[in-house]
Length: 409
Image (tube, rainbow, N blue to C red; front, side, top):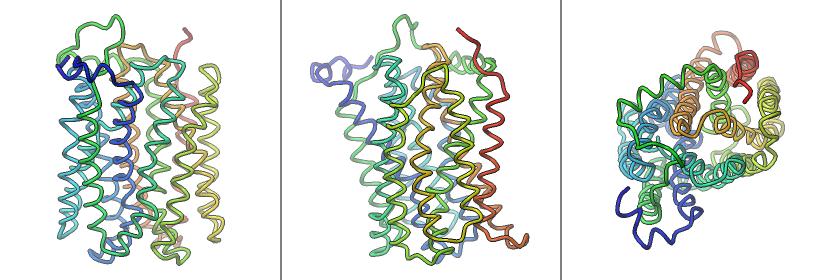
């Protein structure tokens, strides 16, 4: 443990103060991952992006974010949450500056990839911190609160970002987020100390030993069902809020960019309320998995309803309600927390988070392909995109239900 963690000033800081500093960084990662929903129309105008390119652009962040999760888990296990986030997160600032100065699609992609790497530890360090600093029975509630507070980042990429982009340019949006990321990095460096390892945990393993530990994780029968569901639940929400919501409102319903920003803001507010609500409503280990299946199917039905709808009021209303209901995803974190031993929590959360964000990259890329192919099928692009998301969610719920669950304790 470094000297910072044992200093008198650090000893006086509360767990909640440190968690809020980490949550500040998570909020900025939320803003970065949803920026495409607002800047997509001006990017299409400036660079002539196709729907396929737009999906690739939005997915690039999530691909690099998700791909790095295993390494972030190793970093947390070996060096600790604080050191890991302080070393990696400056890349988000670098990536934002690359994107802001982009002269073409290739540089935009590079910027998105670098931002994704910089944001990779953002929520993982929060979950490991909560698992180590708070009682197990409080995990769902505290995680829900962090997800809700961190969703302030979604608010930033609603009306405020739309207004800034409309007034100046999409490049100013990246510059604003780079400034916020610098502030978050400074706050974490000042406030956060290393979270102690769980009682009885041996000396942190080396990198090779930590890598071998993943083999044990994947050998557990319930890991695969968790990963199947994780790949598509958060991805469905992010496909709408993080990519297609703005174009849907602008192109299907003729909204202005600022009007689409208002819708994104309302969706984001509901996204803030959902996780704390479901964290409080957590039914516990006995019934949580049935809730996960039921709510996943309910969200799939909402996407199907939007796919065949042509009324602006319906699309707006369903998007807002679905954002609230999607708060049930916090129960997946509680499921992971309750089904793995304390010594595996860092790696289990890393693998789970990897599935979440590789799923976002996969779904955004796939929906970009679907949108590009839709005219050839004689189908409206958004009907095809939303219908595809509904189908993926339904199949994920079925997979989670039929694959083996954890053995009873």
